[in-house]
Image (cartoon, rainbow, N blue to C red; front, side, top):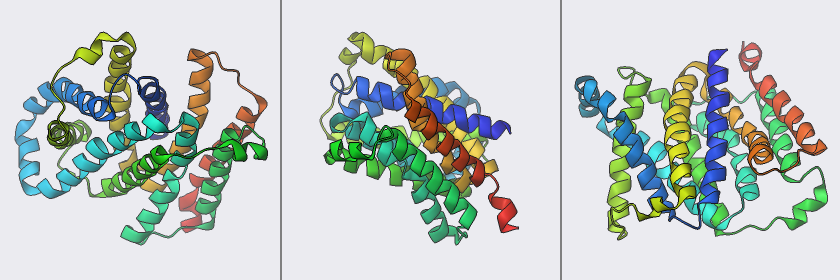
Amino acid sequence: MKYYIFLVFAVLFWSGNFIFGRLVSSNIEPMQLSFFRWFFVLILLLPYILLHYKNILSVLKKKYFLILIFGTLGIAGFNTFLYYGLQTTTATNALLINSSTPIFIIVLSALIFRTTITKLQLSGVLLSTLGVIYLILKGDINHILELKFTVGDLWIIAACIDWALYTVMLKFKPKELNAFEFLGLTTFIGTVVLALIFFYQGYSFEFSFLEKDDVLYSLIYIVIFPSILSFYFWNISTMEVGVNKTGQFTHLMPIFGAVLAYIFLGEVLEFYHFVGIILIGTGIYLSMFLKREVN
C-alpha cells in the first residue's frame, strides 16, 4: 500500500511542476530551467553521492551505457521537452496529451517485454483516460471545438513518449544501486548531458533570472519536490508495483491540477471535476486487479 501512496505524492508534486513551469515560462528559457533545475538537484545530492561513490562508480563502469540511457531519458529529456512545450501550449492541452502516457507505457511494455494487455487492464486505462478527457472538456463535448493545438503540443507528446520509455526501462535498473544511489547517478549523468547542450546553445552560467521572485520560489519547489522526492517515489514504486500499474497514476495529474488551481489560483471546483475524479479513480482501481485476471 505504501508504494501506491508514494505514487500519489509523486504525481501530486509533478502536477505542481506543470503549474510552476507554465507560470515562469515567460521569465526563463526552457533550457535554462531544465539545466539549473538539475544542477541544483545535483548539488543537494552531491554529499550522498560522494559518501557512496565506490559503489556508484563500480556500477557506472560496468553499466555505463544503461546509466546513460536512464540519465538522458529521465533527467535530460523529459523535463526539457516539457518546458519547451509549456512555452507555447496551454496547461489544458498539456494535461490532455499527458493522459496518453499510460497507453504509451502499455504499448512499449508489450513491445519490449512481450507483456499481455488484458481486457481488465485495457478497461481501466480507457476509463481513466475518459475521465481525463471529461475533465479537460469540462463535461461538455462542445468544448472540443475550442481546443487549439500548437507546436508545443508536439513537445509534450515527445515528453510523454520519453517518460513512458524511461518507466518501462526501469525494469533494467541495476540492482546493485539503491533508490538514492540510482537517483544520484542518473542526476549526475543527466546534468552532464544538459550542460553539453546548454553551453553548446550559447547560454552562460549566470543566475540573474533568480532575481525574479516567481522564478526563485518556483525553482526551489521544482528542485525539492518534483525532482528529488517524485523521482525517488516513482523509481522505487515502479520496481515494486510494475510499470503498467504505475503508469495509470499519471491520470491523477489533471485532478491534482484542478485542486491546486482551486487552492492557489482561486478557481472553482465544478460538478464535472468530481465526475472526472470518479472515472479516473475507478479506472486506476480496476488496473490494480490486473494480476488476478492474469492468474
